[in-house]
Image (tube, one colour):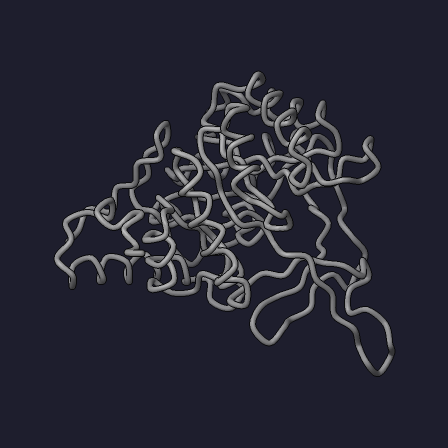
Length: 305
């Protein structure tokens, strides 16, 4: 059996398959299906300084090949995450590698969450969601402005010694520029992609399908876009990349690894099949064994152009 050990620099995983933030809750919700330590890492739903109720309903709509959602980053806030029985205290009992996705509406809010989580037992890395709107700057997303992206990552870097992952938005003109900026600001790794922006309309009511009107598109429909942006990013920076976007099978995951990702995250597929990440791990291993590879590391970035 091939070695699935995954080297992400400051973070070593037992396999390259993790869950995408926002699709796996806080781990507790899926723990009845299988032991969470079978995963490379559990990436929890985004945490902000204070509790957030999220957007009004309806806030998700199933597409032909994916999902449109505007959940609104609902979460219990950092205090409840650190102390609540179904959050970090539970995750500590699972022997899992835990990555906490963090966000804020201003740079001080990002820094506050990072400071609160720094050095806390059971947290192995932070993932910065920079697709959030900066309220003080009129709602522009941190991840679509190079200066804001640099500033938020550099401030979080000052606030924590934990390995730092920055999750990039695909809603930009040139992903390589943002990859270089966040690495220069101190990010140890990059994850991508976050959702594409989209909308849907009910032709009978003539109203948007989402109360928020605009939402994020995820699932199989976005895989070709995600794969191309992972490839572009791998050409631009020399840090580990976590690829995601429409991964439902081991074959999908292997495409991302060949494109330059060192690890991958399964997201929307989990809603249809909670076992999707476990199946992807098995199928990656099967591919490696069938093709004579000894380690998953042997295929990273090996697409032949």
